[in-house]
Amino acid sequence: MFPLRVGIQLHPQHTSYVSFAEAVRQVEALGVDSIWNWDHFYPLYGPSDGPHFEGWTLLTAMATLTSRADIGCLVTCNSYRNPHLLADMTRTIDHISGGRVILGIGAGWFQRDYDEYGYEFGTAPDRLRALGRALPQIKERMARLNPPPLRHPVPILIGGGGEKVTLKLTAQYADLWNGFGPPETFRRKNQVLDGWCRELGRDPVSIERTAAIGGGDLDHLDAFIEAGATHLILGLGEPWNFQAVERLVAWRERQR
Image 1 (tube, one colour):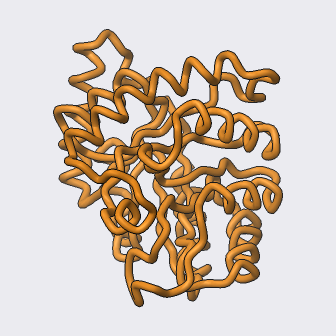
Image 2 (tube, one colour):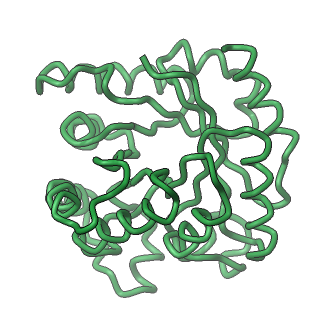
């Protein structure tokens, strides 16, 4: 059984690096277990051409700004990097962070990123097939790197709720799964993942269940736990709401 954990996803948009870096330091000081960014090239809300920072370069900085919390992209778009390169990037940041990186990954969905940066968007089944090909390559390359990761193997988180493909890939390759609310939806997806684990001979309790939540979910945290989540990750944009972080951490302490 996984311990109850809480995390924060700091949105790397409509902010400055100085402000983002200070937020990373602050949320770790407040006691969260994990800190995340995302892997996009343009803002997902607000002015579409506002300030935005690239996720993996930023993740390197996050590794040096922190000393305790796990870090990762929630989630990396598989389409943007060769899987062998991504494995090497992950291993390198694992060393920089002292063994605290989680490789969060998904099939990709934000078409503007693809169009503006010259990637082939294709169809959702195309992108899912590409993810299915990449995951074993990432694991194979990670096992061959010299030096190997400090945390071996590096945990892999798969994000998404597709019941036929994404959750099956999660059962095959992931150490963590990230889903979304409301709690009733999370519960159903969680049960589907359990089913894939049983079909593939995987112990369902070997996969940590994480839920992406917003500020409006802070009144319903217990419902996510009842639905099967053990790791709640609150998304924040600037201006950073540190009171919400304090509330989330205090709730975790009461549960423990």
